[in-house]
Image 1 (cartoon, rainbow, N blue to C red):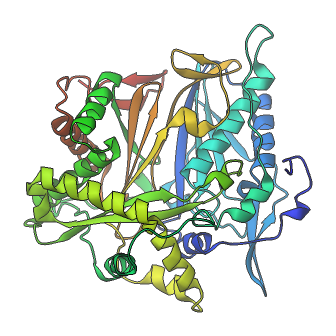
Image 2 (image 1 turned 60 degrees about the horizontal axis):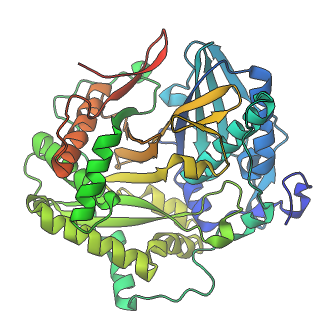
Image 3 (image 1 turned 45 degrees about the vertical axis):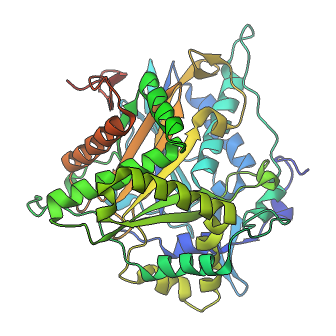
Length: 476
């Protein structure tokens, strides 16, 4: 195993995978291919130790501190000489305006860090380029930052975090779609049908209300998403509802998204029963061979498509979602989208042409990172279900999938300290912050109905970071 401290000469230059090339081709200044993850830590964050921790984490995740250069062999990752570039600010972090979120990987690595420092609790926002990592890799990087910081600041009487080993050479496997010994369990006809559906069916957009005010780009809130919280007892009810119906909780969340999209479009776009809706579900292609991998984009997408009228029979729709997702994953067809990207990049200019076609791939994206503590990967002391990193405690971690031209909603879910955090990223050029809040409330209402949750007063709490302190505030 090659340790992170060894020379990177054995690794770089590193050719881009097909999926990384797709992410790069789909990148544009107005709709950058990036995403944000925000953490809030209680306790007095120490600047020098935090910056050292970020640099140590970069050494274990070299793609996050690399740039892309074009050569006669094609595009390649090469190391960057940058040390940590952290924007510190007292109070709230200085987030980039919506017009300044584009990250040119030819000139800068794919991570930015903004810190809003307060003595009692600080808010830290990471911006990642999706060509450099997926959400799981990003959380692993953050887990390393917290672990190294905790090791530097913990007292002798308290346990320190422990970091797990990484193997830089695993990055050579990041384009591997499935286990080498795996055999396709589905029919060729089914797989070709999925490809035809992805390419041939044009799903409906999430409608913008016709009477929406003209949005002033300069006044768009720089905070990239709105958040709702499902409390511990409500999350348990959702899991019990899934168990009763013989499905996974994620399939219930997908059902709730279909119902939310249908109700929204029916309210703001008229009849939508005959129009197909499609939800994109990011699918990790990680195998045991990737267990020690540094952060990377080891991802594909799978899609569930139904016409709007299917929402009228929720039981039948849930059964369809369950069967379809099971067929996709058991046959290995969750790798079909990555395979399409591989075929397309063999055509000169094919990926650029594909991403510039006036067609959307999905109505909305729904990503579930699962249990955040597990994705942090390192071992942390736990107090009140929360990870302790030296003199700070991780209070919560938030993030949302990016939005694309035509795909106007990216939603992400993650569970931490017994609560589920749901984050909504809407197209800021078409939907206002108030409309994003309305959409978030609609999704929570659907979850309430599906899970038969009986405590609406505490359901769907919104995190508001006040200017005086970092607390979770429940709207009244």
